[in-house]
Image 1 (cartoon, rainbow, N blue to C red):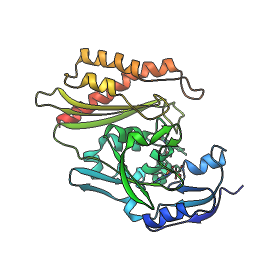
Image 2: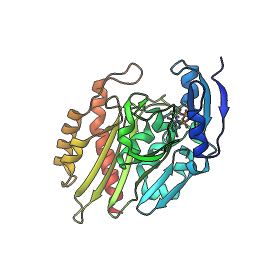
Image 3: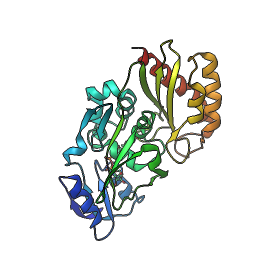
Length: 292
Ligand SMILES: Cc1cc2nc3c(=O)[nH]c(=O)nc-3n(C[C@H](O)[C@H](O)[C@H](O)COP(=O)(O)OP(=O)(O)OC[C@H]3O[C@@H](n4cnc5c(N)ncnc54)[C@H](O)[C@@H]3O)c2cc1C
């Protein structure tokens, strides 16, 4: 079985979006191919007429500090993310999340753009970027636009941008300021190499007293789309991170997520037991880092 008929390898974003737009039949972007090729082989995605390989576009491989934002190109691999010093400083949760993806072989080729575009509710890169309030840069032949990352998900594997004509070029999130820190953690089946039973990323900003001035929390799978725990965030804001606020935050979080039983990973009840464990680990770490 042929996975695709035609293979394009553009050098620029402009060429890539032209390659998408003028495709005579079905078309798909390919980056590392660790999701796409497996999905086609295993029947979750139809074979495509044309693939557009974006791995040679230099603008999509950049990591840079731009004024108050960090820019992360969509074709940056997980391996590159975990060895990047700028990201180690500004995006601790992303480095942790991407460092846990697959094994070394997968991380060598798989990209952050592919993780996000695959649109699973618990992609480790996706969940960690959500906690940083990330925006996504989308290109088409009409130009480029920024959108909040949270808005591009439409359901498991589904996105709100037009896969036939549009491409994720990169991401940006606020640079880390004073008294800010982030962290990521997850629970996997011991033999698991793909999607977590539950993952979570958190970001905090402390005030001068050491209380939580601002917080963001994302976790998955906690519904059909990658999830931001807005009610829990609202509760935690302005509190000190102590036993009483932790206990109440656990209650609110358990109430606002939508956990379910999945045949290959875990029961809904087990996932509920993991929520407080991850909340404590992630926010404890983020708070400690914010103090450094
Ligand atoms: C053995 C194994 C273990 C894995 N473990 C994990 C894990 O622990 N955690 C986890 O989250 N994932 C895991 N994955 C899934 C996968 O490796 C990641 O999601 C990876 O980041 C996908 O990136 P890629 O570059 O390979 O994407 P590809 O397979 O190239 O693309 C994935 C999808 O995104 C689209 N796409 C890619 N780039 C873009 C772009 N820039 N703009 C628009 N659309 C785009 C493609 O058309 C396709 O639909 C694992 C996969 C394997 C095979």
